[in-house]
Length: 189
Image (cartoon, rainbow, N blue to C red; front, side, top):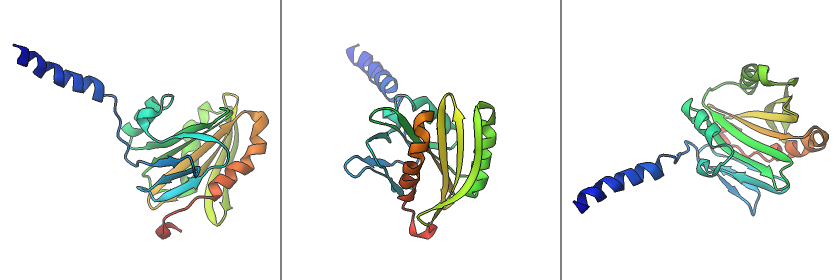
């Protein structure tokens, strides 16, 4: 009888404790000592300026875990999310497999989110350190956002930064500098 109970308890224990684990399609790492996010699966990296707390493991994304799961269900993925140590600025990156141009992807995301945006400053195409991006600036829930859209092979990636209005104009050049550190696979340059 004791063996029978333990045979039932072990599988239930495994289901209970493993059910919440999420496995990323494109695992990446943030190296605090270098302030660098690296995604070997997709073949790109970014180096941050300032003191950021970046989380790459979806199982450690307390505030973003349900968002990660929602994206995962539609074939997209939250690569990282984080905040500055002071929690005055935030960031996140999302990848999806659409094989669109940077501008097509930016326009699509803008159109999908248009009803949730308070102020839309539009999209623009820019080049930073020889790398092409489309950007979108908007205000939502008393925060200003800038999103950078780029691609790696047939994957579309967007990196967002946000902060309160009084800090936004001062930090957009910093966000541009961070995006300027983007290292892409040699086949993508």
